[in-house]
Length: 243
Ligand code: NAP
Image (cartoon, rainbow, N blue to C red; front, top):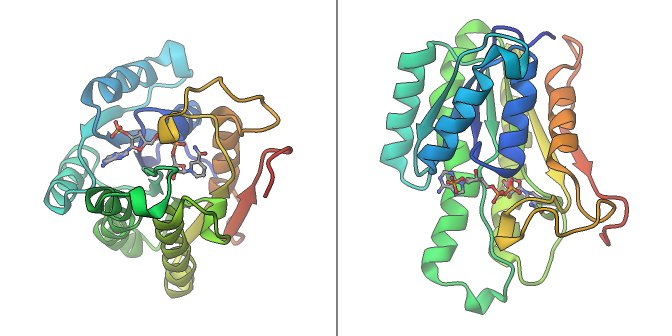
């Protein structure tokens, strides 16, 4: 399926995997609504992507600064996106947060941050954008979970809980909407070389952490499956990760 002239919402587009996904989709001619809290980073990326010399195609890209943990702001943001782009064809629920430390050292505010962004925002965004897709009998939702959506890890209990929940949501929603032309896919990456959990990108050897650009290529593959074929769930690990 061609992505040219489609419109995608990519959350967590200010850095890391979301930024890499946005760049890769722009190369395919996909218009982009970029969502995260960092307005400056989004606006710079939007300018870069909308420059034909950078992407090779004249796409429309715009940043929508929003704290997705605030439900009211999230729904306002979706209204702004619809006002700017009209119809949305693709939703990439990528924004996420987590802290590697003992459960007991997580504050209640950190519990909320993890649950609100990793699962609640994905559910609310899907709720807000699915009706347009159902009307067209066409649309794709990609949920970026984690290999921790299927396996336990000490010091990541709340994070794993949020990703287990995202997996349950994604696979169950697919059952509900796949006969109406909508594809829902879950991507479970292992360690990615991003700023996640205060990591400094470039710190980890390539065999031990997935590169965002390479994983963005995998997201493109999820989005460009033949018409009546879909990948419901895909796990990708760096070759040397212990899992
Ligand atoms: P990252 O570099 O830390 O990026 C996280 C993104 O989420 C940023 O763009 C951030 O933007 C956005 N975000 C966080 N909180 C937000 C909020 N309250 N409202 C709006 N946006 C928010 O991490 P990443 O590795 O690219 O993470 C992307 C996805 O991959 C996440 O769902 C993560 O759980 C998942 N994942 C990561 C790894 C890994 O090892 N890195 C492994 C498996 C799965 P702002 O700060 O500008 O808001």
